[in-house]
Length: 599
Image 1 (spheres, rainbow, N blue to C red):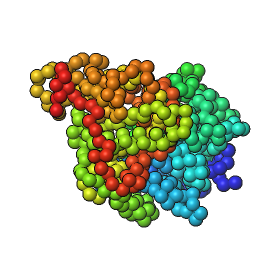
Image 2: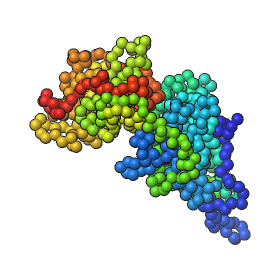
Image 3: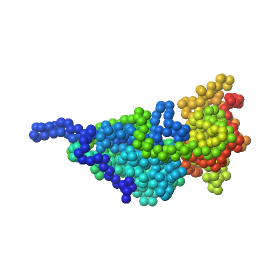
Image 4: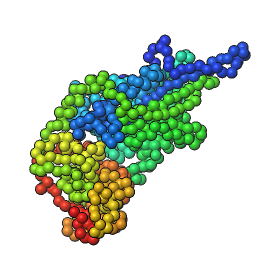
């Protein structure tokens, strides 16, 4: 059985005997018997970590077809991470380092989509996944499973696992029938010290229970995902009893102890902090999933009173976490004396030419793919005014979502219900040109990795949903000047947390206070019936509680799939051939003040 499919793993980080060990020192201790000081054995090593790489190898944005950049001038990709890793290994000594990841590896860019769907790694004689190639070349020691690992189905994930030279860990990903681990729960690594006593480092992998909801179509009846705390409490004592001197958890779970999907599961989504607090015996946790940057965060374990050090490097390879461990030999075993964490910024280094060269052909194929013409548009459409006007380009997202959900529900118990759809203006610079439309044009409408769901809502709930959304506008008195630069993002609400809902007609009176702005709300020309039932086509971020919109997280889920909405848009444009707003665009909502349209 290949190494990365074993339930119990031992991997040696030692490069060979006789190599000088950086970071290992001896200091005087108390005199014993002879009066001469006996040196106390000490050893230092570093665990490096990444998370939420989401298919990023190059510092490249396939949706704009140019080098990645953002307001903070971050860089992305494993090619940058590789350079940082080489620097750390040179400074510390390679044998004194480990490199791990906390999940969400094979989904998120058109590079990863291409090798899951267009030229899939699962076909006979198929390619090796670019993320496997890059991570193997860099020399990863272990990676936890992320929830997005399951998006393309278990066969793609198993093939990726087979192609990796390191184990994919998931102590709480269990076979649904046997309740045995479906993936290796942990890996064990030996670090050779100059004192003749190896350090054994256990890495325990934990993933997100939300997979059971988010990828229900792919995992239902095949795998179950119990809570992080209960599985950590089961495995950490076992790892200690097996001789682990150090226990590091790689958890695809945020640190905050909160849930973003309501009460649908008895498990908290962002549970890494709770694991640190409740499970004794853990020294450090590499945190993932939340896409936040946490250089170092300390949580006191309730039972032992000891600090557990947490760190989350920023997504897409923007940061590399370093956990620095100082150990001392006491009473016949290695004991962790000190742990500290920090993050390194990948924008401080160049891409590793070994990695960019290794995957140059794959990159060129995907660049050609995203520039492929998939249809035409009768007119140009942009999102420039979409934050304050009902624009055809947002209607395009909504018509794709609504048609997809209608088709999915056809013939079922909810087929007769009207389907509404929500969409946000994710980018104020997205555009569909008149004439030829490419994959990157269509994908640019949806820069996030969201997937599509159908939720059951009542008219009354939708009214409250729209009122909540309308908080986005700054209250502006009737007759007062309107400056679009100051009209939106009230209270710091980002553009992606303002939803326009298609299928209803309504006005947003921005002269009124937030909470009482929705007027003339109707469906098919009649005032909306509070008791009427509707299907809302909604992205998984919103459906799982993102943005804290009312009712949606607890609304019954009627359907969900794991394909990214942007890819659904691409498929829709390809099938239609022509994008004609005259066939789907309508002004369903508008801003007013005392009944007078603002625009």
